[in-house]
Image 1 (tube, chains in turn blue, purple):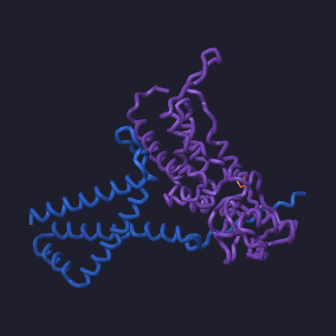
Image 2 (tube, chains in turn brown, green; image 1 turned 90 degrees about the horizontal axis):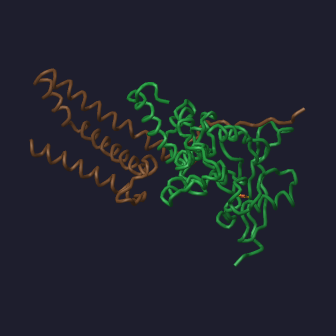
Image 3 (spheres, chains in turn blue, brown; image 1 turned 120 degrees about the vertical axis):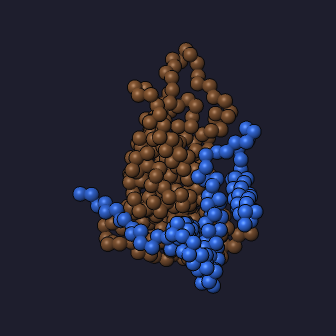
Length: 131
Length: 250
Ligand code: FES
C-alpha cells in the first residue's frame, strides 16, 4: 500500500507573506482610484447633459474642501498606479527594437515615464489654452 | 575569514506522511563556515541530527534545478544560497510553495511534469529535411530570439513565486509557458499553431495577473513573466485575426 499522502498547504493570506506581494496587491488596488476618478468625470458628463444649473452645481461641489482632499488622494493613487504600471512594462511588452538594438528594461521604463509626463503636460497646456 | 565557531539556527518545516497530520517546524543548531550553502546546512542536519530529513539535490552548482526550497519565504536554489548571508538570524526552510509536500522539503512535481509535456517542448520542424540536405542554419539574431528562454533549468522556483498557480494548480504556469515560448521563437520550429490552443486555453496565459515575481526569483534570468505576457498578445492576435483570414486556409 502506498504511504503517500501529499500535503497541500492553504493559500489563506498568501499576499501578506511576502513584501513583494504586499506591494503587488497595493499597486493593483490603486486601479480603484483610477476607477473612482473616471466615475467622477462620468458624473460630470451626466450633469452637463442635465443643463446649466446641474453643471454649475457639480462644478461648485468640486470646490468644497472635501472634494479637494478626495482629488488629492485620487491623484496620489493614480500617480502610484502609473508608476507601477510603467515599472512593469519591460515584462509585459514584447521586445522593443530601435535601429536593430533591443531596448533595455530601464530605457523602456524611462520612455514610458517621459511619454506620460509629456502627454499630461500637453493636455494641461491645451486645456489651459482653451480656458 | 571563516570562523569555525559560528552556529546558525535552521528551522525546517518537517512533514512525514506516515505519522504527521500536518507539517510542523523543528529548529536545528548548525555549526557552519562561511563557505557553506544552505544545502550543506541541511546535509549537516541529515548527517548529524536526523537521517530521515528528506530533500532533493544533485549538482550543487545551480544547474540541475533540484534543490529549490523556500528560504525565509523566498523561493531559492539552496545550493547557491549561503548561510553566512542570514547569520546571525535564524533561517527558515520550507518545501517549495504551492506544490503538495511529499515529505519534508520534497514536493510532488508530477503536475509540473505533465504541463511540461503538454507544451510540446521540442522542435517541431517547419520543413522536413533529410540528412543529405544538411543542417538547419540559424543566424546569431535568430539564436538571440530564444536563447534567454532556453536557459530554464526546470527548478520550478517560478511556480512557487506565482500566486495564480497557488490559487489554481491547473494553470500551466510560468516555467512551462516560458519553455513553450522558447520553441515558438526558434526559427527552426513550426509548432506555434499546435501550441496555440494551450496558450489561449483556460489554463493558459490569461490566468496570469502579471505579479511578475516569477521573473524576479528565476535563478537563470529567463524572464518567464515576459514570455507569458508576450503570449497574451499572441493569443489575442490569433483570436482576432482568425476572423480576417480567408476560410479554408489550414
Ligand atoms: S543542487 Fe543542482 S541546482 Fe542546486
